[in-house]
Length: 198
Image 1 (cartoon, rainbow, N blue to C red):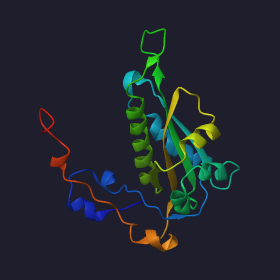
Image 2: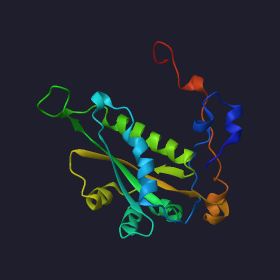
Image 3: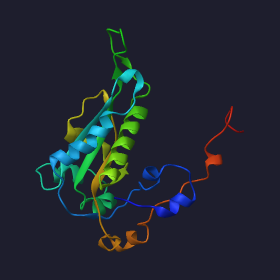
Image 4: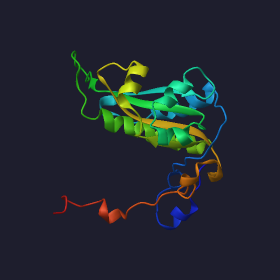
């Protein structure tokens, strides 16, 4: 499980939130289908507009035939460390929905927001179960879409590496010093009462 004890001194957020961070060092171990689906189950319970549940999770596990394909769509920088992860999950969302009582699908303005909520639930569940996660935007979207055979009315948002946290020494030398929990900007730069500041 990831730990970030120094964050507790800076925030009133719950410890299970503060301890979640995104390491790049993973132990090259396998994850069972049962364990991985247990993490993805948390994403299933995320909130969504009209309970439309637009998220979709497409995964490959280390040591399975799909692993090299899923890894190959990441940019080389991400491949250099994610190759030690136990699973890679691509997160997509359906861009249309059928509202309650509606017969025809309509555009879903919150599909990406909802998929992000599902991803956060997965990452928090993973941390609770002793797994580390690292979400990534660095992948070839066109190649990933083609390889996943993703329909045109689905958006592809991110890839998430999941694994047992490893030691920083296992990373390429240039990444070792960065293997620490990141900080956050002060709350008063993010939160405004009434209107956006001019």
